[in-house]
Length: 107
Length: 114
Image: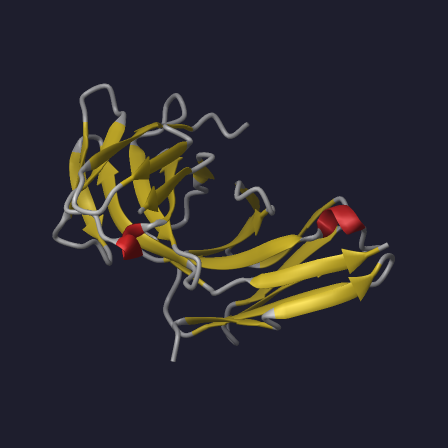
């Protein structure tokens, strides 16, 4: 079993839909990170969370430390949101990555 | 632009060869991380350096080695290359070396081994 599990693996949505991507982890962490990887390959950090909830534009990230679970929500999805979303948990020195969720938003 | 630079962007080489990938961290960041992303796998942590010293090792093969220089740039050396080494290699940097620091990723080096 992977230390960081993401679901779903693949997701296709229509423009405007509300999207939720889930991340569960089994290790102790100091922080959880959500990353976005575009088709060209570049990786961008979206959020770093150690508790509660953060919002940036149409993106919302939440974390429940007791349940070892985090969610990334995208409101009013748009085709430009199409990317791979990766959950990474921060251990003592390094990230442990989930396998990613491939999101495609159709116009 | 994350502020992290990687060279070269693309590298095509043959099996058995040796290559060097270079990474310059963001100004002020002391820690450098190397990751490998193969087609059939997600991101895999290879190795981390902090202020010139190796801090953590992941799934790095013995054929691979890295170092961080006094000016904080880092190099990843891959030798005796095999077809399976074809991947995207990312470098990331952070202020310190702890897991609760945000990491900033470079654009990656795409290595193709023929």
